[in-house]
Image (cartoon, rainbow, N blue to C red; front, side, top):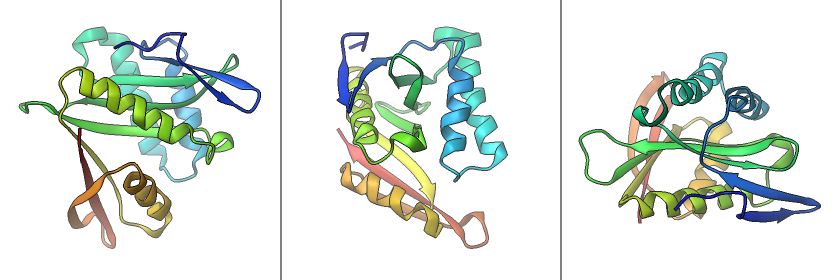
Amino acid sequence: MRYRKLEVLNMTANTLIYRQQIMAADPHAISRIVKSSGFFSTEEITLARELAEEKLDQGNASSYQFLFAEDEDSVLGYTCFGLIPATSGSYDLYWIAVDEQFRSRGLGKELMQKTQHIIRGIGGRLIYVETSSRDQYKPTHGFYESCGYQKEAFLKDFYAAGDSKIIYVKTL
């Protein structure tokens, strides 16, 4: 199922539009949104942008898929996901990010629900997400758990000493 300009979520005075097709301005919007969190390094911000640029360059040949939430002025949040190669219905959720000004209003959960719906609709059965174990990510852990994700693995010191990787999974 494709989300077009018919899907809306009312956030105060703004009406949101959801779309899957990527546009030329999206890499810049992604950089802005990811940077606004204050969590990510310059390298991570660059990586988030590069995934969108790959999708623009390669089109359907790219395995990355996106869902954007926007109002009449700009993109407010997005997800990036894709089928894990050599699996049958297992997907990675690479990014879910909401502009800092619009957090805690339900947009992240709405993006997650719509992304899960898209993945289920294309034959997805499992979604994996990974995150850091650092204390600053405790709200992220809580968010995934509130969306029904379960801790599946803990890889000690994966990113750096004292910075482990937590992998969450959800069965659709």
